[in-house]
Image 1: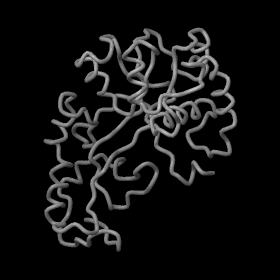
Image 2: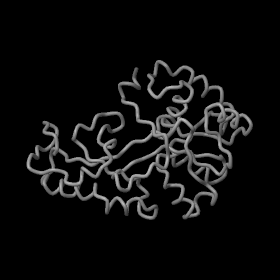
Image 3: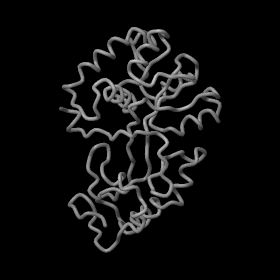
Image 4: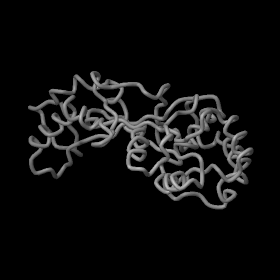
Length: 245
């Protein structure tokens, strides 16, 4: 049942009939914030690297070596972009050797990024403002890598002729930051019962199976029947409190 709080509609007589089919991990937290029964998971995202390279770098050490040997051929979206931020956090897990850390502990990561900066695209004087811009640079051949939170985007863009035909997604050895996106019922919803019926349908296997197809959405599934761990190990998103230090 929906948890009763002053922020959401109090629905005490209805329940998510299909919630039992959802992966329990998807019911725990939303980008580090406890779900506490206020949201129903709609799909899953995984942070990935994208390239054509046959033996891509999978550690921070390997990436630094590759970047230094191939100046101007690597970049990542601005850290203000959540995908670029995920790239930095992935490096941090590797460099710091642990999955949980605070901003105050990030000095070795900043040192690393400053060390590779002169070898980046445009010597690191500017960064793509978004992951989409990073995709454009990769598609045009200006750089050899891109990054995303949507693994299926590679298949989509190859099919559309926007990415090189040999492009593929992969993850760094430390794993893939994984998060879920959710549905909920707003406080001012005029018909909360109907909203709940819709949510109950959207968390069932049928729409999720169709949603998984790259031609439809390519969204990762969160039901126990359809969930497939394509990118492991999976890293849990840090809570805002942890990141602030």
